[in-house]
Length: 259
Image 1 (cartoon, helix red, strand yellow):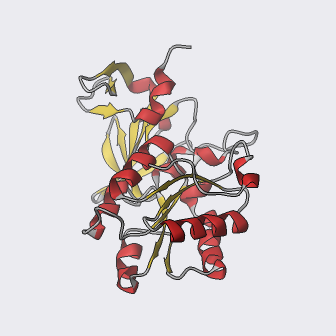
Image 2 (image 1 turned 60 degrees about the vertical axis):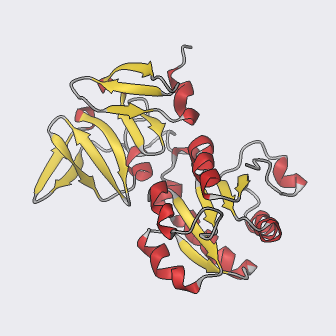
């Protein structure tokens, strides 16, 4: 995986981009052109990695936690376009591809936009503008600004469970789980769905209480009974009063290291 993205020196000199972007394109010429366009249109954003296969996309998403992905659907190892669904709909994605028949599939998977090749600066700018307004970016803790003075947290969360509606206090929520474009909320009174992505919902809950441990999981520290390393070397979170075990992704294992 090429984590040293092709980008102009001015962008490389920035310490921390406001939005971290993953570019997935297996054609080097098209990849470099896309990175250059991105740098000219959004100089405050930064490419954290350029990858060229399905396996590399998954690895980079888990390890680098990008805010936005620009993905060519026809990557190496991508005979079935449904592989995208495995990334989870809480991930903000813009598709860049030469396949016009993929448009319906792209929007079914809750993509931000679908840009046909050859990509023009004008068309890419439209897609990036849409991305900047998407709650998956504005609600992500990695974009900063959520913990400042005057921030208002939710005092209750309304959860749908079939025909029933559960109203839960934040302290009664055990954990959040990404579920396509919704969030599965597990509480002491049961579990159900909230019509909001996990990034947006977690950003509206007290960050000193709710801890991100995986791209798909946010856990309430009140419910954590222990953290153990399994036989494969991964950390796992065990919860008070619950049988399920939540895996901690590599990029979040540092949150459980002793001070």
